[in-house]
Length: 425
Ligand code: GLA
Image 1 (cartoon, rainbow, N blue to C red):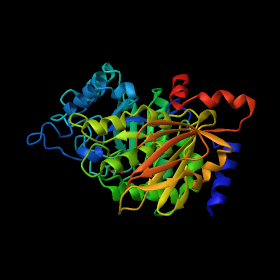
Image 2 (cartoon, rainbow, N blue to C red):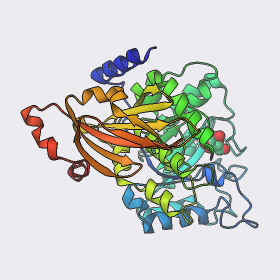
Image 3 (cartoon, rainbow, N blue to C red):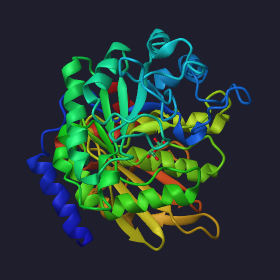
């Protein structure tokens, strides 16, 4: 489909609304929190590496930092366990159990601890016969497992799709959704169903959005720019299919933020943060909050970017242009604002200038726009006809703009800055 056709399609879908999303009252804006996988993986060796192994200590320490260092206030709410928390076998009653050496208190106690910090606890299981790392799967145990998680007072379930006949994915994911619903406890349901379905067939995003609060479409995020770039590319090339299904209650999940680790430069970290906000993606950090550097922390806690991510209109953005090795991405925001990200995709040379007049969204700036630049640094540019941004290789300029049509009722926006809009939220 051509770019113009895509934009029209998104416009019409926007007009006529999406299919009914999962209505469990959760994920009205993209989920924010921390998830252990990318940074800590399946490290179960607590004798050799007690501070970094998958154990209750790790989540307790992360919860402590999240409560003490502004993460919770910034909106990061969920502390999420990924694979490798379980015992290799179920208990005598057929229930999943945490590894007793690494989780001596059990999950219920851990949930109590996390809740006492004003945070929520996420857990991980698998729709098939075993998890991706070989721990017990939930197939044929959906009701028992949902009930167990509810009794433990868990708040989110990441449900993986390993070891499952792909023709049974839909049945499995739908049945677990119903089982969670039957518990009566609101448990945010994070699926990987489309990721596992794509190799055999085009997923039905209507059913997925009716079943899950968020869903992974593409490969796992790694700690590298090539990984982040491949996720962005996949998302842009499939945007006609996936963007319309996103909105309050259900979101496309391009996987974890790897900001604060080892693989991304400062500019690349800014790109990931900006584009994850434009994509209305869950902001699930996988990093070590105990030792994160100041710049990564400030970026992850940047309230202007988080305001874009959490915008109440709940529309996912999309790539609108590729011009001269720049990518332009846009996300419509509430009250007529628009977020624009300009990614310099040329990985050679120095900073390059981009005139926003070349961006398709800029046509809405007729005759003027009120511009606030958020990245690379915050600047209230003000009312302008045009604006040039300078973008480092693999970096991103992020702006919010308010078109001003000069009609009388628009006059009040002439002076309203992005920072004031946020105080109205
Ligand atoms: C899959 C998922 C990852 C992670 C691992 C755990 O690869 O996509 O996000 O949960 O399994 O084994």
